Length: 68
Figure (cartoon, rainbow, N blue to C red):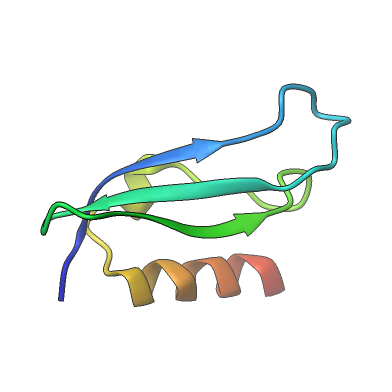
């Protein structure tokens, strides 16, 4: 299973802009995928917590944070 080697977290410019943010990851096999969207006023992600995870683990992290 491929692991994330870098991630870009894109958020709206203003905190009051409630459009969703997203995470795009590059994997050790060279592919880049948009993993998921999230509401930046509810949860946050950092590149450091995503690097080293598989795609499945990243989605599980999102589910965990989204239900906490």
